[in-house]
Image (cartoon, rainbow, N blue to C red):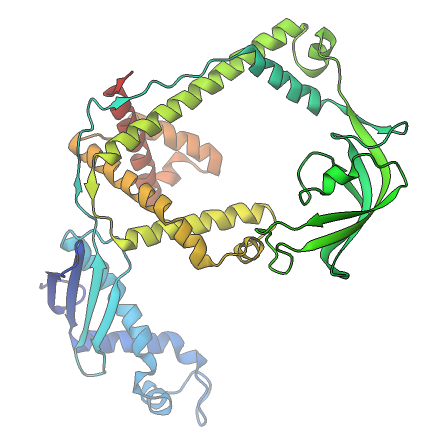
Length: 435
């Protein structure tokens, strides 16, 4: 152990009774702990204001006497231990997959620092059959109905809205209404709006509300009786009967363009409807091809994973759930919401959210571990040409040079792993028996 930056008097590594778990016992020389204490004092001295001394000028001994000898212990531990811990993991070829569960046995000035760390390690994966797996052939054909459906969407996007004055409201109309709701004669939050546009048949309001607008005429007023669903997000309104006072101001409808050659000229680069239909067919065929490829890959991965055995440590599942929460928070931020608002809206707790995502997290972790094991077994590597190609592509996205990205070890690891994963999925599909 000579020549290390920190002298570790002893480190003992042993397995616990739990699978994929190790206990590391550390004993760090007292002088090294005291050096860390001094370093922490030097960083934080300016914050101490002790009578008789200028702010930040009180000697360490005075600070310790004033606030107690343990004032710097926690920060000194955090200053000293992480580098030692990571170094020992690396030198002992330990791949930790969880945060360490620390137990400090002795932390006192003038004495050796003694603590234990229990960590979970990457589990062993026992592969089953992964060559010649049997999967069902997946393919999707483009029908005339698919093309007409797409044309309908195009017509919808190019429709114009006109006011209707000669008839009552019908399903599919866009109505402009004022409404105010009460439950047991009491108004409730979110139950009132003026000039609200509601498309009848969209299903955006409480069941039964839109149906009762049908048949109303402009400037007509009406009381609408509905019942909030039992699974409604608001605890105060679940299953409650409500009355909405509604006034209909205006009825509008979408006027769809006629789908012909003129429509093709106005909405696309083509001169005829036949050319437009052919273009739509080609695009749908490409989409179907991509969809079939993705689903075939998913089936191959599922087949290989179902035949593999692995005891997944809880720490890996927790980390995956953490990532799922972060992704959900990011998606919600695009909608102007945060996680607390969302959980309140659906009537769930964070514990519920994580519990519901547990199986998905387990599946994601197992998939990753199994693919990594196949990569290892088959000695699959990311070719330099593919890595360079991906780096050039990402450099344009991030506005950096390829050389700058190459300096980031974590980014390089991510790129090489991504390419290797693409290759292993191609390997599984190419070696599968597709019927």
